[in-house]
View 1 (spheres, rainbow, N blue to C red):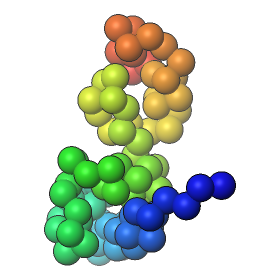
View 2 (cartoon, rainbow, N blue to C red):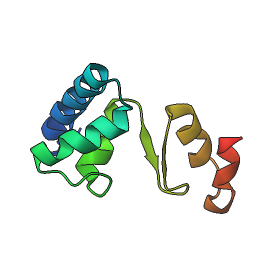
View 3 (cartoon, rainbow, N blue to C red):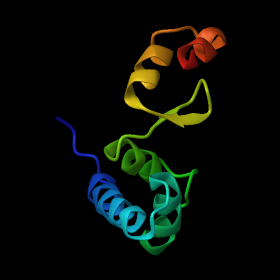
View 4 (tube, helix red, strand yellow):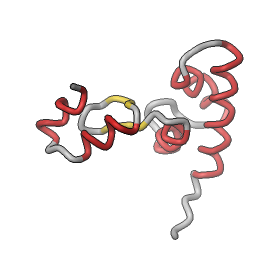
Length: 89
């Protein structure tokens, strides 16, 4: 297993974002975006942000250019990128 140097930061960001979302009653991705600046991570642009989002259950799907749940992500992964939108149905 290879070591991902971004994982400790992503895990801390995910836990912080989840707590912030629960405390403020806002969506988890919004909380992650707010908290990411404190961790020196660019929201929605940095791979560390994507890892943190995946830890809390929101996966970035490149073909759709969206953050989606795991089931939708897996369906889209199994389709050609020109057909990935069918995963949303």
